[in-house]
Image 1 (tube, rainbow, N blue to C red):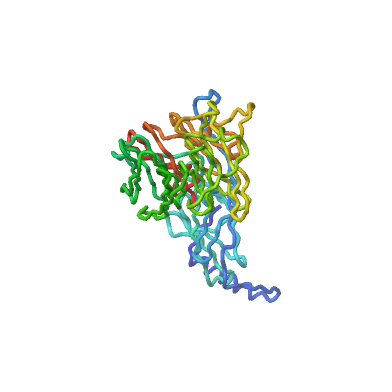
Image 2 (cartoon, rainbow, N blue to C red):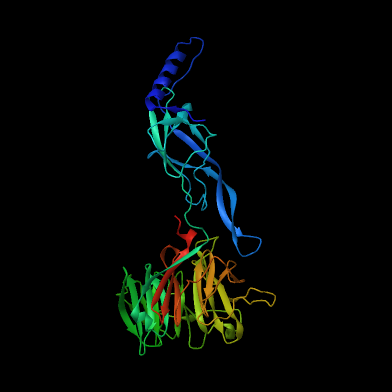
Length: 442
Protein backbone atom coordinates (compact mmCIF):
# COMPACT_ATOMS: atom_id res chain seq x y z
CA UNK A 1 0.00 0.00 0.00
CA UNK A 2 1.36 3.45 -0.96
CA UNK A 3 1.42 6.38 1.44
CA UNK A 4 1.34 9.77 -0.30
CA UNK A 5 3.42 12.51 1.37
CA UNK A 6 5.21 15.69 0.41
CA UNK A 7 8.96 16.14 0.68
CA UNK A 8 8.52 18.99 3.18
CA UNK A 9 6.15 16.93 5.33
CA UNK A 10 8.52 14.00 5.37
CA UNK A 11 11.44 16.17 6.50
CA UNK A 12 9.30 17.85 9.18
CA UNK A 13 8.02 14.51 10.47
CA UNK A 14 11.53 13.11 10.67
CA UNK A 15 12.78 16.11 12.68
CA UNK A 16 9.83 15.82 15.06
CA UNK A 17 10.52 12.13 15.53
CA UNK A 18 14.12 12.94 16.39
CA UNK A 19 13.11 15.59 18.88
CA UNK A 20 10.63 13.28 20.54
CA UNK A 21 13.14 10.51 20.88
CA UNK A 22 15.79 12.83 22.29
CA UNK A 23 13.35 13.70 25.05
CA UNK A 24 13.17 10.09 26.15
CA UNK A 25 15.76 9.88 28.94
CA UNK A 26 15.51 6.10 29.14
CA UNK A 27 16.80 5.53 25.58
CA UNK A 28 19.82 6.65 23.60
CA UNK A 29 19.76 6.97 19.83
CA UNK A 30 22.33 8.10 17.29
CA UNK A 31 20.99 10.05 14.34
CA UNK A 32 23.07 10.61 11.21
CA UNK A 33 23.17 13.43 8.72
CA UNK A 34 24.70 11.34 5.92
CA UNK A 35 22.67 8.90 3.88
CA UNK A 36 22.71 6.89 0.65
CA UNK A 37 21.02 4.01 -1.09
CA UNK A 38 23.46 1.13 -0.66
CA UNK A 39 21.83 -1.69 -2.62
CA UNK A 40 18.89 -2.37 -4.91
CA UNK A 41 17.87 -5.88 -5.91
CA UNK A 42 15.08 -6.72 -8.34
CA UNK A 43 12.64 -9.51 -7.66
CA UNK A 44 11.28 -11.95 -10.25
CA UNK A 45 10.02 -10.29 -13.42
CA UNK A 46 7.62 -11.62 -16.03
CA UNK A 47 8.56 -11.75 -19.70
CA UNK A 48 6.79 -13.06 -22.78
CA UNK A 49 8.11 -15.12 -25.68
CA UNK A 50 6.86 -17.03 -28.70
CA UNK A 51 7.31 -20.73 -29.38
CA UNK A 52 5.83 -23.20 -31.82
CA UNK A 53 2.33 -24.42 -30.99
CA UNK A 54 1.46 -28.11 -30.95
CA UNK A 55 0.65 -27.99 -34.66
CA UNK A 56 4.31 -27.16 -35.36
CA UNK A 57 3.32 -24.28 -37.64
CA UNK A 58 1.76 -21.42 -35.70
CA UNK A 59 3.43 -19.53 -32.86
CA UNK A 60 1.93 -19.08 -29.42
CA UNK A 61 2.75 -16.47 -26.79
CA UNK A 62 4.12 -17.89 -23.53
CA UNK A 63 4.94 -16.35 -20.16
CA UNK A 64 8.17 -16.87 -18.25
CA UNK A 65 10.00 -15.36 -15.29
CA UNK A 66 13.51 -14.01 -14.93
CA UNK A 67 15.49 -13.06 -11.83
CA UNK A 68 16.16 -9.34 -12.04
CA UNK A 69 19.32 -9.39 -9.92
CA UNK A 70 21.21 -6.56 -8.26
CA UNK A 71 21.36 -3.11 -9.82
CA UNK A 72 24.55 -1.09 -10.21
CA UNK A 73 24.75 2.12 -8.14
CA UNK A 74 26.91 5.09 -9.16
CA UNK A 75 27.14 7.18 -5.98
CA UNK A 76 28.90 10.02 -7.80
CA UNK A 77 26.12 10.64 -10.33
CA UNK A 78 23.37 9.15 -8.12
CA UNK A 79 22.18 6.83 -10.87
CA UNK A 80 21.02 3.23 -10.51
CA UNK A 81 20.81 0.87 -13.50
CA UNK A 82 20.64 -2.81 -14.37
CA UNK A 83 23.32 -4.72 -16.29
CA UNK A 84 22.97 -4.29 -20.09
CA UNK A 85 22.34 -7.96 -20.81
CA UNK A 86 20.19 -8.85 -17.79
CA UNK A 87 16.60 -8.60 -19.04
CA UNK A 88 15.22 -10.20 -22.22
CA UNK A 89 12.88 -8.82 -24.87
CA UNK A 90 9.26 -8.32 -23.73
CA UNK A 91 10.08 -8.10 -20.02
CA UNK A 92 7.14 -6.50 -18.19
CA UNK A 93 8.61 -3.37 -16.59
CA UNK A 94 5.23 -2.07 -15.41
CA UNK A 95 5.10 -4.42 -12.39
CA UNK A 96 8.53 -4.44 -10.77
CA UNK A 97 9.26 -5.46 -7.21
CA UNK A 98 12.55 -4.77 -5.49
CA UNK A 99 14.33 -4.50 -2.16
CA UNK A 100 16.22 -1.31 -1.31
CA UNK A 101 18.73 -0.85 1.50
CA UNK A 102 20.01 2.49 2.77
CA UNK A 103 22.86 3.83 4.88
CA UNK A 104 22.03 4.28 8.58
CA UNK A 105 18.42 3.23 7.97
CA UNK A 106 17.62 6.27 5.86
CA UNK A 107 14.00 6.57 4.74
CA UNK A 108 13.49 5.69 1.05
CA UNK A 109 10.71 7.23 -1.05
CA UNK A 110 9.77 7.20 -4.72
CA UNK A 111 8.42 10.08 -6.77
CA UNK A 112 5.13 9.76 -8.66
CA UNK A 113 5.23 9.38 -12.45
CA UNK A 114 2.59 12.10 -12.91
CA UNK A 115 2.98 14.59 -10.02
CA UNK A 116 5.65 15.92 -7.68
CA UNK A 117 4.34 13.79 -4.81
CA UNK A 118 6.53 11.13 -3.24
CA UNK A 119 5.50 7.86 -1.62
CA UNK A 120 7.13 5.79 1.06
CA UNK A 121 8.75 2.79 -0.55
CA UNK A 122 7.86 -0.79 0.44
CA UNK A 123 9.35 -3.95 -1.04
CA UNK A 124 5.90 -5.42 -1.74
CA UNK A 125 4.83 -2.64 -4.11
CA UNK A 126 4.64 -3.41 -7.84
CA UNK A 127 6.16 -0.33 -9.45
CA UNK A 128 6.07 0.96 -13.02
CA UNK A 129 9.60 1.28 -14.43
CA UNK A 130 8.61 1.68 -18.07
CA UNK A 131 10.46 4.99 -17.75
CA UNK A 132 13.18 6.20 -15.31
CA UNK A 133 12.00 6.88 -11.74
CA UNK A 134 13.32 9.16 -9.00
CA UNK A 135 14.10 7.84 -5.53
CA UNK A 136 14.71 10.08 -2.49
CA UNK A 137 16.53 8.81 0.59
CA UNK A 138 16.40 10.91 3.80
CA UNK A 139 18.98 10.86 6.58
CA UNK A 140 17.89 9.61 9.96
CA UNK A 141 18.43 13.12 11.34
CA UNK A 142 15.86 14.40 8.85
CA UNK A 143 18.16 17.22 7.79
CA UNK A 144 19.51 15.93 4.48
CA UNK A 145 18.44 13.86 1.51
CA UNK A 146 19.83 12.50 -1.79
CA UNK A 147 17.98 12.01 -5.06
CA UNK A 148 18.70 8.98 -7.27
CA UNK A 149 17.52 8.28 -10.82
CA UNK A 150 16.66 4.60 -11.32
CA UNK A 151 16.59 3.30 -14.91
CA UNK A 152 15.68 -0.33 -15.66
CA UNK A 153 15.88 -1.42 -19.29
CA UNK A 154 15.10 -4.60 -21.21
CA UNK A 155 16.42 -5.51 -24.62
CA UNK A 156 14.45 -4.29 -27.60
CA UNK A 157 15.89 -6.97 -29.89
CA UNK A 158 16.41 -10.72 -29.55
CA UNK A 159 19.92 -11.73 -28.57
CA UNK A 160 20.29 -14.53 -31.11
CA UNK A 161 18.67 -12.86 -34.11
CA UNK A 162 20.78 -11.87 -37.10
CA UNK A 163 19.94 -8.51 -38.66
CA UNK A 164 21.04 -7.53 -42.19
CA UNK A 165 20.84 -4.20 -44.00
CA UNK A 166 21.76 -3.36 -47.58
CA UNK A 167 23.89 -0.25 -47.37
CA UNK A 168 24.98 0.29 -50.96
CA UNK A 169 24.55 -0.65 -54.61
CA UNK A 170 27.73 0.21 -56.53
CA UNK A 171 27.88 0.13 -60.34
CA UNK A 172 31.58 -0.75 -60.52
CA UNK A 173 31.15 -3.71 -58.16
CA UNK A 174 28.14 -4.73 -60.25
CA UNK A 175 30.42 -5.13 -63.29
CA UNK A 176 33.14 -7.13 -61.54
CA UNK A 177 33.55 -10.76 -62.58
CA UNK A 178 34.83 -11.75 -59.14
CA UNK A 179 35.40 -10.00 -55.81
CA UNK A 180 37.47 -10.52 -52.67
CA UNK A 181 36.58 -8.54 -49.55
CA UNK A 182 38.73 -7.65 -46.56
CA UNK A 183 39.26 -4.88 -44.01
CA UNK A 184 42.02 -2.44 -43.08
CA UNK A 185 41.62 -0.40 -39.89
CA UNK A 186 37.90 -1.33 -39.94
CA UNK A 187 37.41 0.01 -43.47
CA UNK A 188 36.01 -2.31 -46.14
CA UNK A 189 38.46 -3.23 -48.91
CA UNK A 190 37.56 -4.98 -52.19
CA UNK A 191 39.74 -6.50 -54.90
CA UNK A 192 37.50 -6.66 -57.97
CA UNK A 193 38.18 -8.35 -61.31
CA UNK A 194 37.51 -6.43 -64.51
CA UNK A 195 38.01 -7.67 -68.09
CA UNK A 196 41.71 -6.82 -68.03
CA UNK A 197 42.86 -6.29 -64.42
CA UNK A 198 42.01 -6.33 -60.73
CA UNK A 199 41.18 -3.09 -58.95
CA UNK A 200 41.72 -2.49 -55.25
CA UNK A 201 39.11 -0.17 -53.74
CA UNK A 202 38.39 1.05 -50.23
CA UNK A 203 35.14 2.26 -48.69
CA UNK A 204 36.00 5.43 -46.77
CA UNK A 205 33.19 7.34 -45.02
CA UNK A 206 30.60 5.98 -47.43
CA UNK A 207 32.63 6.72 -50.59
CA UNK A 208 34.45 4.15 -52.72
CA UNK A 209 38.01 5.08 -53.72
CA UNK A 210 40.23 3.16 -56.17
CA UNK A 211 43.73 2.94 -54.69
CA UNK A 212 45.69 0.51 -56.89
CA UNK A 213 45.47 -1.71 -59.96
CA UNK A 214 46.98 -5.20 -60.24
CA UNK A 215 47.09 -7.93 -62.87
CA UNK A 216 44.27 -10.42 -63.38
CA UNK A 217 46.03 -13.16 -61.37
CA UNK A 218 46.47 -11.06 -58.22
CA UNK A 219 45.13 -12.40 -54.92
CA UNK A 220 44.45 -10.56 -51.66
CA UNK A 221 44.22 -11.32 -47.96
CA UNK A 222 43.84 -9.00 -44.97
CA UNK A 223 43.63 -9.14 -41.18
CA UNK A 224 42.40 -5.57 -40.52
CA UNK A 225 45.98 -4.50 -39.75
CA UNK A 226 47.63 -5.46 -43.03
CA UNK A 227 46.53 -5.94 -46.63
CA UNK A 228 48.65 -8.39 -48.66
CA UNK A 229 48.37 -8.71 -52.43
CA UNK A 230 50.33 -11.36 -54.34
CA UNK A 231 51.04 -10.90 -58.04
CA UNK A 232 53.66 -12.53 -60.31
CA UNK A 233 55.82 -13.79 -57.42
CA UNK A 234 55.77 -10.40 -55.72
CA UNK A 235 54.13 -9.71 -52.35
CA UNK A 236 52.75 -6.21 -51.82
CA UNK A 237 51.88 -5.22 -48.24
CA UNK A 238 50.30 -2.12 -46.74
CA UNK A 239 49.49 -1.21 -43.16
CA UNK A 240 48.33 2.29 -44.09
CA UNK A 241 44.65 2.82 -43.27
CA UNK A 242 44.12 4.52 -46.64
CA UNK A 243 46.34 2.03 -48.54
CA UNK A 244 48.46 4.91 -49.83
CA UNK A 245 51.84 3.39 -48.94
CA UNK A 246 53.03 -0.06 -50.02
CA UNK A 247 56.06 -2.28 -49.57
CA UNK A 248 56.97 -5.01 -52.04
CA UNK A 249 59.27 -8.02 -51.97
CA UNK A 250 60.07 -10.76 -54.46
CA UNK A 251 58.87 -14.16 -53.28
CA UNK A 252 58.61 -17.59 -54.82
CA UNK A 253 55.00 -17.97 -53.69
CA UNK A 254 51.75 -18.29 -55.61
CA UNK A 255 49.55 -16.49 -53.09
CA UNK A 256 49.71 -15.22 -49.53
CA UNK A 257 47.29 -17.14 -47.29
CA UNK A 258 47.16 -14.98 -44.19
CA UNK A 259 48.80 -13.58 -41.07
CA UNK A 260 48.90 -15.13 -37.60
CA UNK A 261 50.73 -13.03 -35.04
CA UNK A 262 54.20 -12.31 -36.46
CA UNK A 263 54.03 -15.17 -38.96
CA UNK A 264 53.03 -14.82 -42.60
CA UNK A 265 51.79 -17.88 -44.50
CA UNK A 266 51.63 -18.47 -48.25
CA UNK A 267 51.12 -21.23 -50.82
CA UNK A 268 53.90 -22.05 -53.27
CA UNK A 269 53.57 -23.00 -56.94
CA UNK A 270 54.13 -26.60 -55.80
CA UNK A 271 51.17 -26.41 -53.41
CA UNK A 272 53.40 -26.25 -50.33
CA UNK A 273 52.64 -24.13 -47.26
CA UNK A 274 55.34 -21.49 -46.92
CA UNK A 275 56.22 -19.54 -43.76
CA UNK A 276 57.85 -16.13 -43.40
CA UNK A 277 59.06 -14.66 -40.11
CA UNK A 278 60.29 -11.37 -41.62
CA UNK A 279 57.17 -9.93 -43.27
CA UNK A 280 57.65 -11.74 -46.56
CA UNK A 281 61.32 -11.07 -47.29
CA UNK A 282 62.35 -14.71 -46.90
CA UNK A 283 60.36 -17.94 -46.91
CA UNK A 284 60.69 -21.54 -45.71
CA UNK A 285 58.54 -24.62 -46.15
CA UNK A 286 56.21 -25.13 -43.20
CA UNK A 287 55.74 -28.66 -41.93
CA UNK A 288 52.53 -30.69 -42.31
CA UNK A 289 51.57 -34.01 -40.74
CA UNK A 290 49.78 -35.54 -43.75
CA UNK A 291 50.00 -35.92 -47.51
CA UNK A 292 50.22 -32.56 -49.30
CA UNK A 293 47.56 -33.77 -51.76
CA UNK A 294 45.03 -33.19 -48.98
CA UNK A 295 45.86 -29.48 -48.76
CA UNK A 296 43.17 -27.16 -50.12
CA UNK A 297 43.82 -26.04 -53.69
CA UNK A 298 40.77 -23.80 -54.28
CA UNK A 299 38.42 -21.57 -52.26
CA UNK A 300 41.14 -21.36 -49.61
CA UNK A 301 40.34 -19.61 -46.32
CA UNK A 302 42.91 -18.71 -43.67
CA UNK A 303 41.60 -17.92 -40.18
CA UNK A 304 43.65 -16.90 -37.14
CA UNK A 305 42.12 -16.69 -33.67
CA UNK A 306 43.37 -16.45 -30.10
CA UNK A 307 42.98 -19.51 -27.90
CA UNK A 308 40.80 -19.23 -24.80
CA UNK A 309 43.59 -20.31 -22.45
CA UNK A 310 46.43 -17.99 -23.51
CA UNK A 311 46.39 -14.79 -25.57
CA UNK A 312 49.99 -15.47 -26.69
CA UNK A 313 48.92 -18.78 -28.23
CA UNK A 314 46.91 -18.62 -31.44
CA UNK A 315 45.22 -21.22 -33.59
CA UNK A 316 45.43 -20.96 -37.38
CA UNK A 317 43.01 -22.73 -39.74
CA UNK A 318 43.37 -23.51 -43.43
CA UNK A 319 39.98 -24.49 -44.87
CA UNK A 320 39.03 -25.00 -48.49
CA UNK A 321 38.38 -27.49 -51.27
CA UNK A 322 40.78 -30.20 -52.42
CA UNK A 323 40.80 -32.32 -55.57
CA UNK A 324 41.37 -35.30 -53.23
CA UNK A 325 37.89 -34.89 -51.68
CA UNK A 326 34.81 -34.41 -53.82
CA UNK A 327 32.33 -34.57 -50.92
CA UNK A 328 33.60 -32.38 -48.11
CA UNK A 329 35.81 -29.37 -47.60
CA UNK A 330 39.18 -30.01 -45.97
CA UNK A 331 40.25 -28.53 -42.63
CA UNK A 332 43.85 -28.06 -41.46
CA UNK A 333 44.94 -26.33 -38.26
CA UNK A 334 48.03 -25.53 -36.24
CA UNK A 335 48.99 -23.88 -32.96
CA UNK A 336 51.15 -20.76 -33.25
CA UNK A 337 53.07 -19.67 -30.15
CA UNK A 338 54.61 -16.20 -30.11
CA UNK A 339 57.79 -17.15 -28.21
CA UNK A 340 58.18 -20.74 -29.34
CA UNK A 341 61.40 -21.66 -31.15
CA UNK A 342 59.58 -24.30 -33.19
CA UNK A 343 55.94 -24.37 -34.21
CA UNK A 344 53.77 -27.46 -34.23
CA UNK A 345 53.22 -28.78 -37.80
CA UNK A 346 49.94 -28.23 -39.60
CA UNK A 347 47.50 -31.01 -38.67
CA UNK A 348 44.92 -32.48 -41.03
CA UNK A 349 41.51 -32.77 -39.37
CA UNK A 350 39.94 -35.71 -41.14
CA UNK A 351 36.16 -35.99 -41.08
CA UNK A 352 35.33 -39.48 -39.81
CA UNK A 353 32.73 -41.51 -41.69
CA UNK A 354 30.44 -41.46 -38.64
CA UNK A 355 30.59 -37.67 -38.50
CA UNK A 356 27.22 -36.51 -39.83
CA UNK A 357 28.24 -32.87 -39.52
CA UNK A 358 31.23 -32.57 -41.83
CA UNK A 359 31.59 -29.29 -43.71
CA UNK A 360 30.28 -29.95 -47.23
CA UNK A 361 32.28 -29.04 -50.31
CA UNK A 362 30.90 -25.69 -51.48
CA UNK A 363 31.96 -23.65 -54.47
CA UNK A 364 33.04 -20.14 -53.54
CA UNK A 365 33.48 -21.30 -49.93
CA UNK A 366 34.00 -18.60 -47.29
CA UNK A 367 34.87 -19.25 -43.65
CA UNK A 368 34.95 -16.50 -41.03
CA UNK A 369 35.86 -16.34 -37.34
CA UNK A 370 32.60 -15.40 -35.63
CA UNK A 371 30.74 -15.73 -32.32
CA UNK A 372 33.56 -17.70 -30.67
CA UNK A 373 33.52 -20.22 -33.51
CA UNK A 374 33.76 -20.59 -37.29
CA UNK A 375 31.04 -19.59 -39.73
CA UNK A 376 30.97 -20.96 -43.29
CA UNK A 377 28.86 -20.38 -46.38
CA UNK A 378 29.12 -20.77 -50.13
CA UNK A 379 27.42 -22.42 -53.09
CA UNK A 380 24.12 -20.60 -53.57
CA UNK A 381 24.71 -18.68 -50.32
CA UNK A 382 21.38 -19.95 -48.99
CA UNK A 383 22.74 -21.58 -45.83
CA UNK A 384 25.37 -20.95 -43.16
CA UNK A 385 27.26 -23.59 -41.18
CA UNK A 386 28.62 -22.98 -37.69
CA UNK A 387 31.39 -24.84 -35.87
CA UNK A 388 32.04 -24.31 -32.17
CA UNK A 389 34.60 -27.12 -31.82
CA UNK A 390 37.47 -25.85 -33.97
CA UNK A 391 36.15 -27.20 -37.26
CA UNK A 392 35.41 -30.79 -36.22
CA UNK A 393 31.62 -30.54 -36.67
CA UNK A 394 29.57 -28.06 -38.70
CA UNK A 395 25.84 -27.58 -38.30
CA UNK A 396 23.22 -25.37 -39.86
CA UNK A 397 22.49 -22.90 -37.05
CA UNK A 398 19.14 -21.10 -37.12
CA UNK A 399 20.77 -18.02 -35.59
CA UNK A 400 22.78 -17.39 -38.74
CA UNK A 401 20.90 -16.60 -41.93
CA UNK A 402 21.88 -14.94 -45.19
CA UNK A 403 20.04 -11.72 -46.13
CA UNK A 404 16.71 -12.08 -47.88
CA UNK A 405 16.85 -10.86 -51.46
CA UNK A 406 20.63 -11.11 -51.84
CA UNK A 407 21.60 -11.23 -55.52
CA UNK A 408 25.10 -12.02 -56.81
CA UNK A 409 26.98 -13.78 -59.58
CA UNK A 410 29.94 -13.96 -57.19
CA UNK A 411 30.20 -12.81 -53.58
CA UNK A 412 32.78 -12.34 -50.85
CA UNK A 413 32.48 -12.00 -47.07
CA UNK A 414 34.63 -10.33 -44.43
CA UNK A 415 34.33 -9.54 -40.71
CA UNK A 416 34.73 -5.88 -39.78
CA UNK A 417 34.48 -3.63 -36.75
CA UNK A 418 31.96 -4.31 -33.98
CA UNK A 419 31.37 -7.89 -35.21
CA UNK A 420 29.69 -6.82 -38.45
CA UNK A 421 29.88 -9.19 -41.42
CA UNK A 422 30.20 -7.57 -44.85
CA UNK A 423 28.96 -9.19 -48.06
CA UNK A 424 30.09 -7.72 -51.39
CA UNK A 425 28.14 -8.93 -54.44
CA UNK A 426 29.44 -8.91 -58.01
CA UNK A 427 26.69 -8.92 -60.64
CA UNK A 428 24.34 -6.75 -58.56
CA UNK A 429 26.73 -4.31 -56.88
CA UNK A 430 25.02 -4.89 -53.53
CA UNK A 431 26.91 -4.37 -50.29
CA UNK A 432 25.31 -5.88 -47.18
CA UNK A 433 26.20 -5.45 -43.52
CA UNK A 434 24.88 -7.52 -40.62
CA UNK A 435 25.60 -9.09 -37.27
CA UNK A 436 24.20 -11.21 -34.48
CA UNK A 437 22.34 -8.77 -32.21
CA UNK A 438 24.01 -9.70 -28.93
CA UNK A 439 27.49 -9.15 -30.40
CA UNK A 440 26.62 -5.47 -30.72
CA UNK A 441 25.58 -5.02 -27.11
CA UNK A 442 28.00 -3.04 -25.00
